[in-house]
Image 1 (cartoon, rainbow, N blue to C red):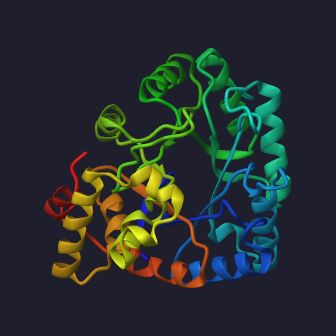
Image 2 (cartoon, rainbow, N blue to C red):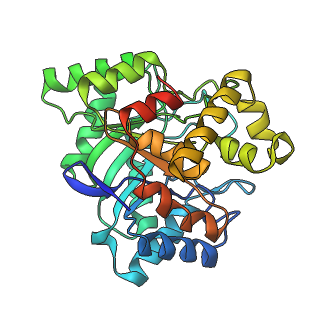
Length: 317
């Protein structure tokens, strides 16, 4: 597993996603996944306060599983740990929760769940465009100055809002945003059911290139669209992958990825993640798994290196 510099640390180029830990993935399997990931050389674990048992609506399950695992393994210092808070009210994605009290309470509950004093990166899960950006940046600054987070980031924020926040931080001496977390994958998502999600677009891509701000991207495997299409065609696609990614553009991307797989000997799944780590800015895909063999397969993607020509052959942004 390769590493890149991230917020002053060496972080593995592929982060382990943990959305279903403590829910669909029970604790014993989650521990097995994390042990296997670390054995591959991985050290970057991404979670969120909202993650866990979505069916029951109980939050914090993923963080609790990770916290107990780190405590038992005594490896908190070896893990680059990020979590997210300030998710809107479940069931109403436009019921924002970005007041100072709500963000701080989420942060403290996350630290309790994770059984640690500080995370390496703390993200706001969504934006509230109606809230003045200075108020939000003052809240984030308080988290860093209070020792609860080493760095702060944002998820699903538009590039114009990030630029406004960065200018505000510089103007008022506040802690800047260190990292952005959008949806970004080789297969482009063409149907988005949640209008509060933000997918990497030309404006955001240009911002990352020009500023060098790192990107940690979710849904990086596009619900397995390319790998499943390569293995079994349309019949192998789960409903979400079919609905969100099946289109002529992505079929063309698939054909090019299969061609490059034949030329390089890399799997389609590995190429889809390697395309992200080959971007002209630091890009760390978050890769989830539902089976142990999917975790073990991250070794191939984590070691794969594409040239700029190979990257652009697959898809230019």
